[in-house]
Image 1 (cartoon, protein in one colour):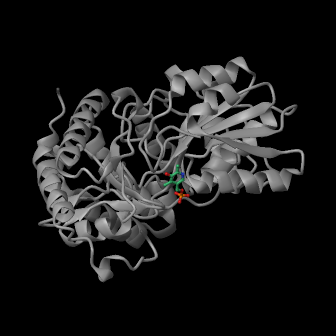
Image 2 (image 1 turned 90 degrees about the vertical axis):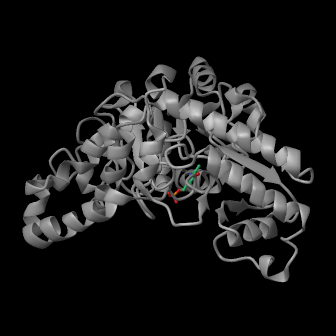
Image 3 (image 1 turned 180 degrees about the vertical axis):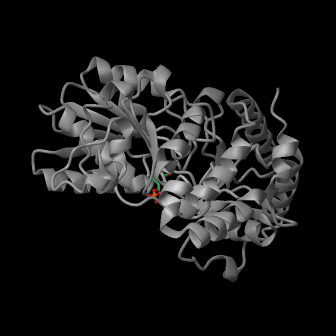
Length: 398
Ligand SMILES: *Cc1c(COP(=O)(O)O)cnc(C)c1O
């Protein structure tokens, strides 16, 4: 192993006494991000004002940062661009893919997908007309359900609830064999495990950066367009920043070359600056090392909880090949149990109806953190410490 995870851990601000098992939902603050953002605010926005778009290179940031993300997801340089939110990027990928497969009308997804992806697909179908439909099947049926009616598959590689991982290569190959395109949502993959978009022949992919990639709340998403489609994919959200010459102010749209055409409007420079600080840390990380460390942590957590807490039922696959970088347990009182954990400094989250979800992020979580979390959860479960009224009232964000 060449990655020094003890060193990466020191680069994050981790509050004293907190074991943060929610880097899969909102990554922690890289210590250098505060200074980096402050510099962008004062030395760039403050002193350069509008000239920052040229002088500080703001205009090129979406592609420049996209190239740094590309390394983490096995994408070709020049084919990943930053901007907007993941929901928007999913919509863009879907709209382009449907237009590229014009004789077909079905979007295929699965019931394990994140609702926003499904909602975006529903909304797009409504706009395109009654011939278009979203077909949602059980995750284990996806491969079988790809047939000659399917225009595009929209699959999230790692299930946000259970942490079950799809076989990207096999599903993409099946989609292509049946004449469909394949879009991958990497929300729980980018920064969680090695991804090989190029090797899997994916057509489009999108993901967010505020989870495993630590760009902070509201950090921009990314979208990947395979090089073979780069000049053919037509953006439905054809904003001026994706125009071939934004400052020509033409009255009609002409797409920029390649993935850059997926830009829509003005990029979030302060969030991109925070993301760059995080990517400095990612530059020192070997993705194979990350996977090895992640599987060791999730194995340790599964074994420890199962040994001490028989009423918690594992929802995550035991098979390494089928697992992302999170572990989920089911319990009918999952919400209250999670509140009791949070009260003791073990931060995870709850996903309806009954999922206790914990993310394992080797950049800042190590074996001793997992052992301490197991001890606290065991105490909570063995002594029913979760069974208090104040732990049962649901907050807006769970
Ligand atoms: C987190 C997540 C999203 C969130 O989308 P935003 O537009 O960034 O809010 C979408 N899809 C999946 C699969 C997610 O896990």
